[in-house]
Length: 93
Image 1 (cartoon, rainbow, N blue to C red):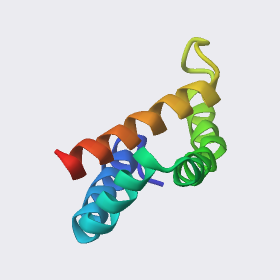
Image 2: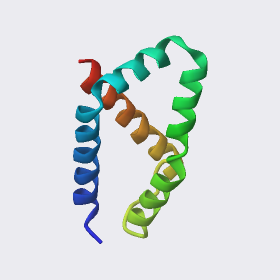
Image 3: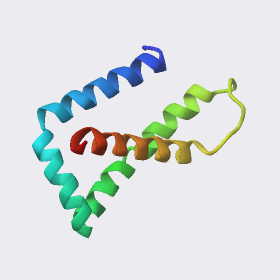
Image 4: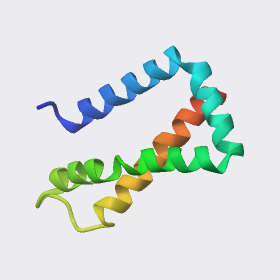
C-alpha cells in the first residue's frame, strides 16, 4: 500500500479532476444545496457515509505512534467538511 501522503494526494487530484469534468453539474448541486433543504440533507448524508471509513484510516495511521487526540470520527468529519469547502471554492470560485 502507498504511504498516506501519496494516497491523500492521489485522492485530491482525482477529486479535482472529477470536478473539472463535471463542473456544471457540481455547480448546480451546490446551488440547489444552498436553497433546498432536501438536497442539503442528501448531500450531508452522502458526506456522513464516508466518516467511518476515514476514521478507520485515521485510527490505523495513529496506531501506537501518535498521542491521543480528538476522536477519529471527529477528525474525519472535520476533514470531510474541509473537503466539501474545497470543492465549493474550487467550483464556484
